[in-house]
View 1: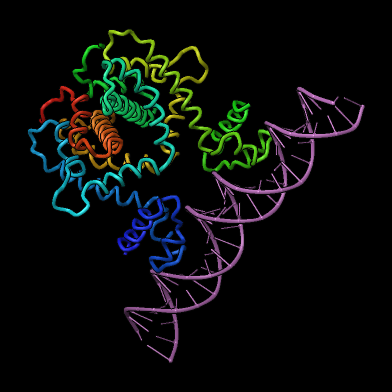
View 2: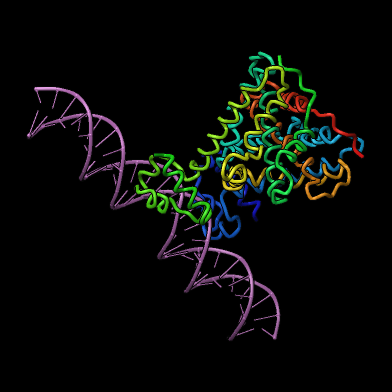
Length: 188
Length: 188
DNA sequence: GACCGAAGTGGTACTAAGTTCCATCTTGGT
DNA sequence: ACCAAGATGGAACTTAGTACCACTTCGGTC
């Protein structure tokens, strides 16, 4: 039922884009009223979020199935194969999934723009420090570093608020970023 | 001018919350019309985003000022001191800033909920693999790992689309995550 | 000093998301 | 056949955001 509406909606999203598709349209094509749509989904975005959550659980299952001996970072990497691995068996494999992933990021909100903003601000300097690659995908490493660092800051800030500031933010940030501290090359 | 409106808005946000403050209210208190407000800011969220962007540039400046010899991850960490370091000189220092940071994350959008969703789904397993800490802030390390991994996936997916899939996503993801690969402890 | 164009401003009306409330229909049990 | 409950649809409302138009104001020109 939810699945049926969802299917209709994603067809329309694919045809016209997310913003150009109204809830009224989705409801009409799915054969229910606007009111009922909102009773089921609450928000238009929840359609996308719901699908993302499904994948999230799949990834979690894959993660849980990784061997105990595997290091966490590696286990995560392997779990991500679920979405990253080009699957030859399914019809339209990971392209649609990554499209959805990417859409979900750009769709929802400005939070993303904020992070993108910080990323685009910080990444050039990091890229420079990593050495002067100017390959098309050359700055991926810089972006990964910056995005992860922001994530650590988010996590630390959240914990900081959760403990009412009784632990200094800098300590928490050290804790978070120490966990990730990679064998980075020395500045060029 | 923008600053003046911004000041009024943040006072109202603090008093009533972001959602319970209408643009009409802000405009009225700042002495301009709703129409003019939108001419200046475009969106209500841009008020918050704008402030975040300011901090972003401050951090970028601090980052650029770090010694060349410093490793990128460390340089980022030091640049983040701008927001993380408890500043004794200013009146209400980093608490408000982090409040804003945190609000900006929860405010804008569901993208954040999605990431939070994935994080909350994946983190317990990672926490378990890191060893059985159950401290209040004990899962910070797990959250940092998961959030960073998600960031790498985002960056890789973005690059993948930018190069029209001519480089396999798995390769890009390896590239991104190898950059971050930490000296993680072996699963307990 | 009157005139004029441009830019900034406000007002009105619109679309669309999301909420609330009420009326209606269906449906399962008595 | 009846009745109560839950699902559905409709109408009205609030708010963000957009489009358009009218008004003012102000600097320059004749």
